[in-house]
Amino acid sequence: MRLPHFYRTVGWLWRRKERVERHLYERERDLFNAGIDLVFLDTTSTYFEGRAWEGWAKLGKSRDHRPDHLQLLLGVVMRRDGVPISCEIWPGNLHDAKTLLPILDGLKQRFRIRKVVLVCDRGMVWRRI
Image (tube, rainbow, N blue to C red; front, side, top):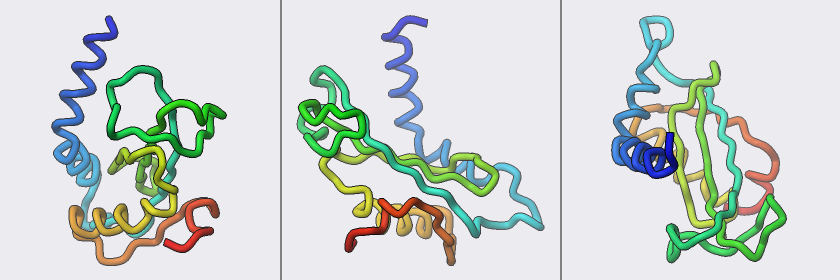
């Protein structure tokens, strides 16, 4: 596969993000597995070269030791069986802890989850949100 095909595919998937996430959430639900009661959240940052995300990507803490490059913060939410149900992208200058409440609100609204037990590392919650 050539790189332009990959980029087109990613763009196509991103435009259908919510539909794909809904399908992943609904997958394997049944009478005994009616909802989500435990999710795992992980975030990481990544840097990139170029100008594609210019204006949205920001200089921030670089886990790749490249603070001189623009960063994006990536987050994924998974069910207890490891199936991802949601992914998000934020500007690279946002601290991980600032993503927690928007993710929880999004899970409650989009998937009608009443109670969530969130498992994350201490770096996520060590600062005031």
